[in-house]
Amino acid sequence: MEELTRLVLVRHAEAVCNVTGVVGGVRGCTGLTPSGRAQAERLAVRLARTGELGRVGALCSSVLPRAVETARILSPGLEGPGREAPEVEADCALCELHPGAADGLSWDELLSRFEAPDWDVDPSKPIAPGGETWTGFVARAAAALERLVEVYQGQTVVAVTHAGVIEASVLRFLPVDSRVARLGLHTAHASLTVWQHRGGPEGAAGRRWLLERYNDAATA
Image 1 (cartoon, helix red, strand yellow):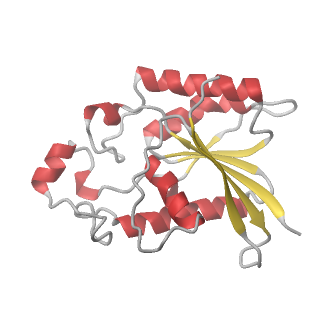
Image 2 (cartoon, rainbow, N blue to C red):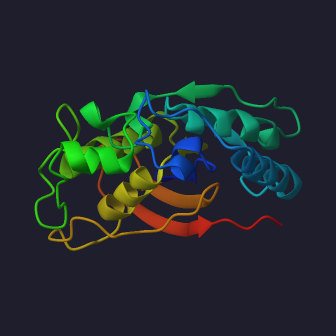
């Protein structure tokens, strides 16, 4: 019997590293701006008011401060009758592309110290020494999302993550030409991208993904 699982991807709210132009890995990320906290709070109010996500089985996030902080603000908005606000489960596999030696540098410093890869030409080059390639990142991020669907089969799971992870989901879960390395999506801060997944256990026939909505940043 097929089960419907909903995977709700939330891009984190505006972060300090976004507005200061810093590469925001584990060293470079210092959390949300005041504007970002307000964005996350508005989304939490919306979700509490509308109840549009229904019963949420789990709330996950990447381990980066901007995602964890967003998830903690959203958590009260996921309460409902007979259920408490979910605890945040942090998972490094949901992080943005790991920047290696570029972590904490400004983007200008990254370009001056390292040869910036052109991922539209060769997505197999790392962003910096010790960092991920684009192809490696997409594979890692998509696998992390697929694991969430396996673990929370038949439920709704919310994952607060990053623009790159959301792009990876589109590249892997929709029939995108395999020769296309990147899509150049502009996913808004504190927006929802919702996937429906139908299928049984891993390897079962008929597994499929449906994109329910992308980049939903409505505040009302």
